[in-house]
Amino acid sequence: MSDATAPLLSVQRLVKEYRSSGGLFSRPSPLRAVNDVSFEIARGESIGLVGESGSGKTTLGRLILRLVEATSGRVIFDDVDVFNLDTRSLRSLRRRMQIVFQDPFGSLNPRMRVGAAVREPIAVHRIARGNDATAAVVRLFQEVGLDPSYIDRYPHELSGGQRQRVGIARALSVEPEFLVLDEPVSALDVSVQAQVLNLLADLRERRNLTYLFIAHDLAVVRHIAHRIVVMYLGRFMEMAPAASTYTEPLHPYTSSLLSAVPVPDPREQRERIVLQGDMPDPRKPPTGCVFHPRCPHPKKDQRCRSEVPMLREVAENRWVACHLAAEPLPLLSGQASGAAN
Image 1: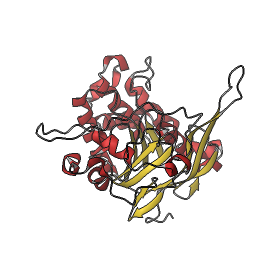
Image 2: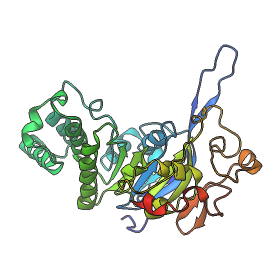
Image 3: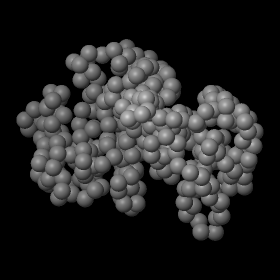
Image 4: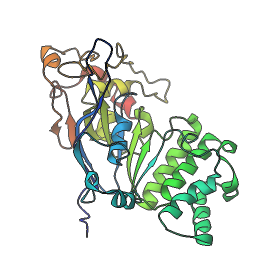
């Protein structure tokens, strides 16, 4: 019997390295999409994993589910070492760990009716058959806010928001405990985003689900995440409770992401921190802190350029990979109230 106080998921020093072929006159260079990351998720907790495109967020989510094989590290799910499972055992574990993909249209078979798409995992895992399986699909459609009459429709006959609800219903069909939500609202209109986010929040409460919610926008995860993890170029920059992240960011990268979050009050003034340049080539990461070439911190120095900052706990449950984190961050001074809106 598992310990209810133990974390549901433990990720330990996870690394994913790809080998490029190199050019005609160049040697192959390794690309570390995920670089030595560790964290835990408690039962019923929702973690928001945030960062720019190319930061390694999606790769991390797929590594946890073993949809991609890791280079090194461990993933422990409820005392089970995911990377040591054989095919049969992994298939059984997949009932408890599911994913909702970013593109709801691309994740559905265009030649399969959406009801059949939701029914398929029920049949694969032998959860129900015949009329019982049909009744389960109807209940799932109702639970995610879809009219059961949509069961016989094809994906192209539904809107983006409706297709994503089908994707959520399919993930829930095997009664999982843990969901990786890979930017589940980024392809949707803003008004539909709010509806789907509210649905996900309700489902987490009703089913006591555990989430790893991947997003590139801090505003998206604000109302659904208990903790925020900020990722950049394969590394964790900051990990802290959501409330602390929005009111008092410790890392300059977090601060810059937060400055881009729209403020609903037009009278509220906030200085936008525009990062210079693009994210570096992950095959040739910068020395020292990987963020230092774009870092706007006024006290950035040679140590930032030469020494890799380790992720360390600087306050209770607040972790940051920055040499200057012990000092107050001046980038959003006087703007904390706006950031929390």
